[in-house]
Image (cartoon, rainbow, N blue to C red; front, side, top):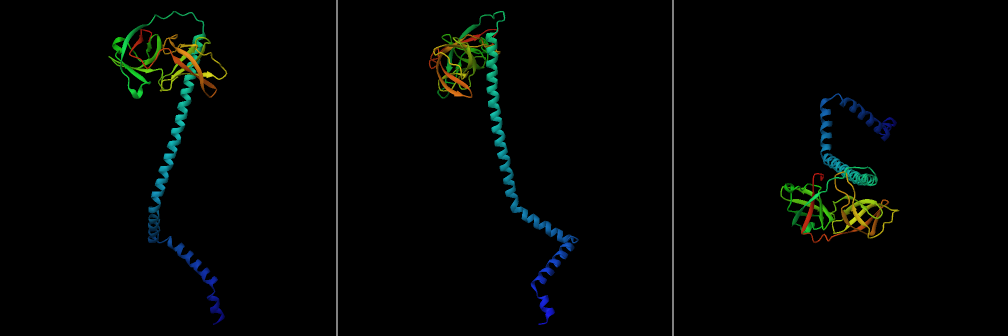
Length: 265
């Protein structure tokens, strides 16, 4: 075979020629409309199996961002609630210790109400009484039994009202320890126990000290007996909680007294 023919059959020469031809065809194809249509069609066909994966990925990303934003909002709400309670406690402490001469409010009056409903599933949360707005009962009115605070009116209708008990998880009110004048927040755990919360860790309170309500901006009168101080419990964030023994058995509420008057909220 001649030398010139052997040089043409060299694979490097064939590859180079193929690359040149491919480049020429690629350059020429951009000037041909039908080639563009073929390229677009191929791209569309390749997109069809890819679209579900991209769609699912986008939805998973949105869900993950939504969960993250929800957790952040819950953390902010919890922080704001704690700051609100501490602020109300600070305001109550200031009002308790100030020595301004003010006209004493008129003595409140009471209406006696019978307990209509107390569901077993929410035994320590709330009760329903047979007195409403027609008798002067308003949301926020203190509810007593035997002279001790047992709850406050949550919602009032014309003829009846719902009372949130001090053992409820959603009950919260500033109180003071009479023997030391320490202020904290009273709240329940929904299981029959009541706690004095947000007492500084370095404070040591004497047991069996009377616990009474403190002054509130909402018009809740101070000095209403709640019970006596029990042993210390949990410690969280530099604050300690104490068990509070109510002055009356909250499991035996049949008739209660609701505080009413012009100064009540």
